[in-house]
Image (cartoon, rainbow, N blue to C red; front, side, top):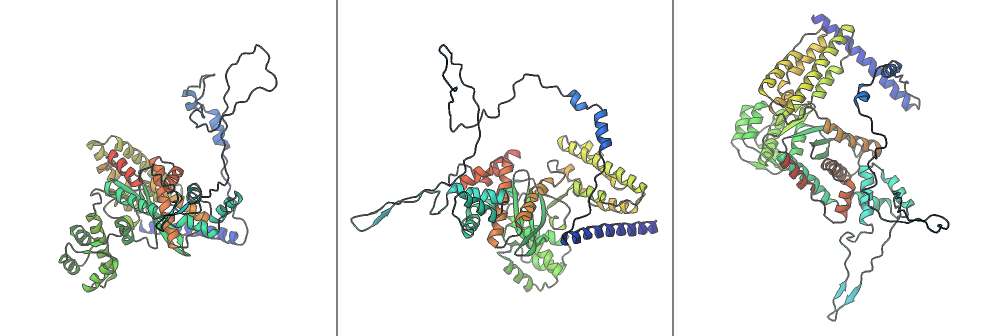
Amino acid sequence: MKLLAWGEGLIEIILRLQEQELHLKDEVAVLKGEKKRPKFKPSRMHEEAGKTCAPDRQQQTKPARRRGKPSRSKTAQLKIDCEEIIEPAGRIPRGSRFKGYRDFVVQDLVIGSRNTRYRLARWQTPDGKTLSGQFPRAVAGSHFGATLVSYVLYQHHHCHVTQPLLREQLREWGIEISSGQLNALLQEGKERFHAEKDGLLSTGLALSAYVTVDDTGTRHQGNNGYVTHIGNEHFAWFKSTCSKSRINFLELLGAGHGYQINEDALAYMKKQGLSQVFLQALREHDRASFADQRAWQRHLDGLGMDVARYRNIATEGALLGSLKRRGVAQDLAIISDDAGQFNVLIHGLCWVHAERLVHKLLPLNDQHREDIARVRSGIWSLYADLKDYKRHPTLKRKRELQARFDAVFTQKTRYATLNRLLRRIHLNKSELLLVLERPEVPLHTNGSERDIRDHVKKQKVSGGTRSELGRQCRDTFSSLKKTCRKLGISFWNYLTDRISCSDHIPLLPHLVEQRLVHAA
């Protein structure tokens, strides 16, 4: 049996190497200016024939719309800015009766420059003082109005329009603006937006029952980095860093609030296997806090902790202790794709990523294909029942689902590699079945993947960032845009409200707080 498993493993490695070779050939062809290998999709003639022959049950059961039934007016709720009455051409015969109007609404967009000259009156008082008129609050001394600034931010951060194209567009519309001025509009003076974005994370972590997390690669100053997403159905928060370690993730959760030695920190260090000597030394400094990384590193140096692994464990524990002290929800669950850096607090796993491991296996014969198909069917059947359990949780169903989980992930198949994978997934039983204890948590991280996909698209269009301020603005407006969408707020209305200082829209952290309190 071991020899069979060894042989299957070798064949799988060979197949993966062959697949990788084909991908590399395609990349070389693209670099040479040639085309990739053509991909021929399977014929769908049989599927289409089956559709035409088989009766469509949905179409049979769906009631047909009654002929002549008036459809809902799409323009009834529109604001009418201009009304024009058009009389019939020619002379109206005597005796004709007026029968009212047939309304026809035309939607249009007004595009053009609107330049305003502010003439600030100046007066000199008898005592020699000078009185001068003040700019409106929305102008604040800027040579570009609130609508223009909002449009620039909306196009760049929401529509992914690059700065050169955006400048060309504005100049064609009669706006005199340089590349430096455009860059300043996108990045400078956005402290209020940054503060509002930071408030999203603190509010979300303090009041949420769970968050989903994910990260992806990004570029900054020509170097590879990472962007991390934290959020749920009420808010989204992004942060770009140079690392994706657990220390980095805990620093993001803590938002730079330092390091704390307390019972939570010491319990984590003990669980992770920190040496008893250093654990006791740290226990003697219980309740001690350290404001920044430099002070914490000096403290570890003073304890003689020179082993990198021990320093990492101690740092992770101190960050976790600071996080707990700040009032993060005690039952906060973190749902991830099983990346090691996210395994903190109450950890849950994504079922989609777990099943994907089975889906990626390369079957070597028909028996392997049959076993993989059977296992995948069992996983998705269990997944569907877990979704139903979320709506109607009972103790009886909980025990049944636990037994079914064991049956699915401890079964023996004719594919040795699949057996090893099932055993590995079974070790994560408590994290995959967190929903049985906490029916409110999701079974997947699809929300995080959808949110972070927008960042990937923007990077493909604009490339990486070049300045720290540019990276900060990209994270901030990505967070605010996604949060507005989750709260049902127009991102355009939000931008114009903030830039014009109207403040009709409440702060987003306050709206998130109201949603979370109402949902609790």
